[in-house]
Length: 554
Image (cartoon, rainbow, N blue to C red):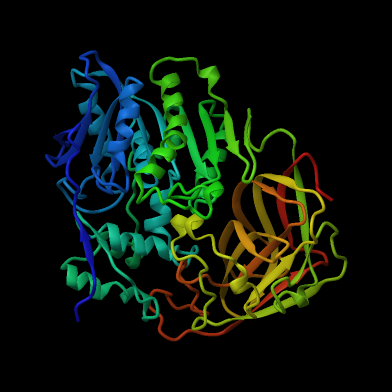
């Protein structure tokens, strides 16, 4: 059987760049593009280490180079080990600490370098910045990780199915981007079972498997991406945590920032925008021009994308006035930019909405109630988790959520999705801060998955997701409520809109499903039906917790 696979190799090297093969300590050479100012004075360097082709349109590094050069920086862009033009093993996360150190060491020794290095980039090339921090190289003076997390390796490579909910899109990512030097685009048949085999025919045709995916499937002792210690335990360097409220990695990005804040680190800054992982803007929905395809849209994006990093580098790489960099800048979705000295911002007060009338939760899209009053009476809601009839994912590409921005109503009237909806709010208000839920749940199985989405419901009934969270609950007990973290948001709810909490036991194929029993979900063919139970009210009421600027809108 011949499958349709598009294998994508490196794009031509930009005419303004000079490619150098930089040697690592083991002799492996990494392809590195240098964009240097026209003068001969030593300058600080901004380093980007990525696995998606340093010359490619997707990462648009050649389009960023003129902006960095104009501000007095050299831009150094490198294909990581085993990808595109670089030599070595194609295995994510494994070598980035030492390769990051060796690359920075090489930069600092060049005649055009003044010995000061900053790093920039999204997603995996945000994670390579944390790996470089873990390396402890003294020339690294500031980082701007965007849409990323220091624990990205754990999220994508080491999550065990019996200790957490595995993002199946992470396996899909490994199977497309980490097979060999190229990227391979193809459609996956998610109906095949067992799920561990869904990529096998494609690997046979390519002639190679993904070592990263095999690591995930083996569930063996995971690799340690930080053998010399976690980057948070290194001496602090300035970091601008750049977050997208609609990014699927945003909960982990914000966890990084909040963790470092809790440790008293004073050089951590936050810039949060109303964007998704691929930098699509809420204000542009529906996008008339896709910046991934149209240069005009890309040029409009670049100032918003790169501008905060340039200002940050001016302060921390060139010794400019750091007082000009606000500790927190965030965009309020459907609103404006704001600044504060901390997050959650001053004036943000807790908002608690209780789940009520659980018996109605699976009857229609509105379901039960979200109410500011704690219900005295306990009520039970029930639904069936069928591992062969899973709740379908509403978005096909979680990285480009705002490009699709689906109406969540398509699943809200399913009998295996419980919903709780507030009354319409007379006045608009601003959500600004973390979102969590505490639920009393039980199952007839040994454990259960809980998938939550908080949605904005418009007067016409359209429901758009704001934040989401999911958790594996081992041995759930109605008398031991479980907490679910849904990340953070900055979002303006318009007058007449409602909030809705979506609760389900699956979200497929974005997340690895629960087999309903103790089977490995990668390997099962036939699973077991479970009855899931949610209790509202009583001694352990279930509730949603958020933060609102200016006081509760009630």
